[in-house]
Image (cartoon, rainbow, N blue to C red; front, top):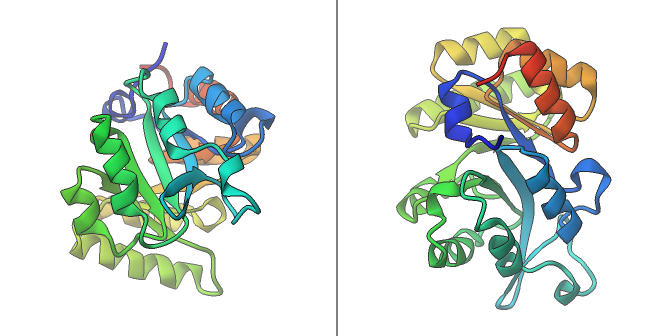
Length: 224
């Protein structure tokens, strides 16, 4: 049975997001989208870029953007599945209004989460009806960067930090939880790491193995 992320959160379970290229499909492809929908993951992650007036799905800059799945096609594929939320991982800073224009044409704003190159776009995203998860990348001072991001999230009234799973420790997880903040972990593809983060109780796991993650969630955290 398909549950919405909100139902999962209300049940104090970890949200599962199907990463681009899930279940051994080509990233940002029609097959990826179809498999993500069929997997029963609560969210789908895609990478978004822009070429002129064309918004398209791709992690890197392609030789021919016209050959990529367009954002319009993706949204139309997901539109009927009302419980699925979408994680738009935007690859350049100016994309938010262009994405939200297409989202709002389909009345899908409540289903949108933004990550990537948009940490400074909170007011714009929220004004357009979307949600921002602050993105953080590994560095030589992961713990220091997380603590700075904690302070920023508190000051800007944001609750979710989206970061590489290797940066999450028991210590910083407990510290964030005590401050009303949460971790979204990417990209978690091994059973060992999925188990670790489910047992910890992170807010979201983004994975190329959503079926495995859902199975393990049922085993470790229980069902709705």
